[in-house]
Image (cartoon, rainbow, N blue to C red):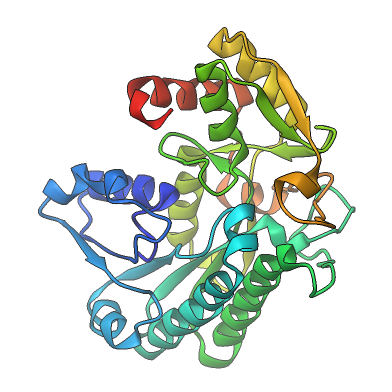
Length: 320
């Protein structure tokens, strides 16, 4: 598993270990943290290798000996993308290229974790897997992540068609839960942290931009099911919730559930990120494809997610 010390990867590792799997994680710890997987390192079936996913000589013997690969390593968070665009683009494209070359060489099944960002500025919601991608200008670094992940998808599908690589692509929509950090701009952990501190909850723009938040446990359940389903090979699947909420609604519900005295503070995008920053107004998945194949899809409710994140931060006061 690449990126296995990250938020999603640490939860996925836990589930795999619980089922008796042997898990080898490669993570540079640039955005993932040792704290996420510290407890897992005591498990004899778990191995952590701190290195870059772009190091092909390191990856090759690991891919050769494994049964399957989950490729989760990527730059994450809008703030990181804007502040470190070179690392984001190189990690996404070069890291995925390395993984695909090696999994093709040894014919190992691989799941590529992609993102709802690939839909870009498309306004045709809910998004279907075969909808167009609509990106902003290359002068706006905000779109570099979306474009690099789209290249990852093109490359993965090309390996499937030309080399017969058994690959599955999962487009993740706003996945949230315990252990997620707000360090790189993730909205829910930032709002929860501010509410618990009694600070103003920062909402960018007018707060009417909407998202569908998915609990991490639901997302990894679908990822694992896709890896076990032969009919998923060579296909793309949206993994996300069907509950569309505005960021303002998330902030207000966070205040209610934490019983906080905080108020909402609206901040222009230009102050939060960069001049001319562009964002998706709505980000809503059509999950009928994954539901038809697996019989289920992520179906998280906002209150359940918020309660779990709030409980996590209360259990770890040092984080807020």
